[in-house]
Length: 339
Image (cartoon, rainbow, N blue to C red; front, side, top):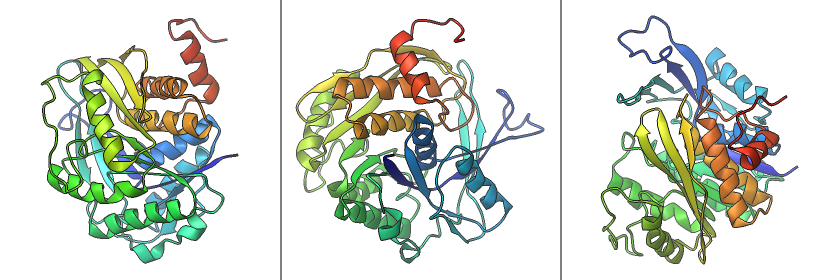
């Protein structure tokens, strides 16, 4: 079974019931999630051997998060326990014209206080074929940025394919800082997911393209992807695109570039139960299809199906099996009960 290693922070998610605002809520619903953890779970559900690497507090919340990963078949043999707390975020789901809202309480978490010396990459990457990490992780602080840099370099040295979801978060660092820091990491990345905040940089870090229309469509990103291939040498660049009709009703598609050709998925109309983790579901489908050597069009179609389906379930993680996704790819216009 092909093994994928992901690294990042898993967080405790506390959600208001239904569509209540925080000021209304008298109780909170508990989930766990985080970009790289979501990908590890999604890949395990699709049938790959996935391993998640992080640091959790040595208390019941840390054990509960670890057990959550294990429940979905994710290996956590290399999990580090220590530190004082788990990162938390509070989710208030939007509806119709009211956007969703997230409040973070993650400062000083066990993972954010990780030290580079705590991780043995020769063990972490043993028998693995693929390593995945996201832009949220190096944004936490300088030590974790250096940890990310070493992890990617070590993965490449050990012959793994690497993927990186740029996943820019303005609450963690500025656009300029993200550009500068993430550019340093890209030499060890094979598959880039997303284009911001890298899309406008030349080799000296200067802006070279800033003429996107106010509401860009997928075709507007083709020249940007071409420049990114030339600048960083990626094997693939992929991105999702959504047309938002309301907070709960989107039309979705995705684009994949291999440096020569561009591949579009078909558009999928979806009503939303929970948008959190949908980009991670796309990444899950992309890694699964590429590690299994799908042709590019089949890869972007499969990844987009994973992306769309995640919108229909509560929580951060995609819980769909390979047969679930394949059935949707083949029969996405059929809404009959599956018996």
